[in-house]
Length: 149
Image (cartoon, rainbow, N blue to C red; front, side, top):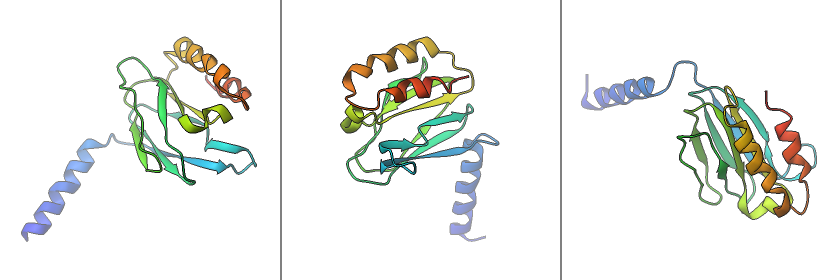
């Protein structure tokens, strides 16, 4: 076996060990115009995931990035670079509320539920507090919270 083949096998084995069995990668696109005609949206805006899954944010227009505003206890808040792919590992159950800061005023928000919504009240409070910063589409907060089980 060549040195390159051994290196590739070692890397492949390491990847297999680092990903939980059955883990899924959910894709959320950052869009200027959604499939339903809505402007400045994450699509999908609500993701139901399991512990061990991840979410990959893909900018499909320019000027977007993603920042967490509420995460479960023990999760470090995150913020991506503008117009860059960004992945978030989901290691804790709960609600992950996020925004596109430049477009929050237009209601560009999203929510991930990982397993049980253990931090539902804290996330809901943080989400409701954003309504005053949204000039349009603030009903999206209630729509997202209505999807939480």
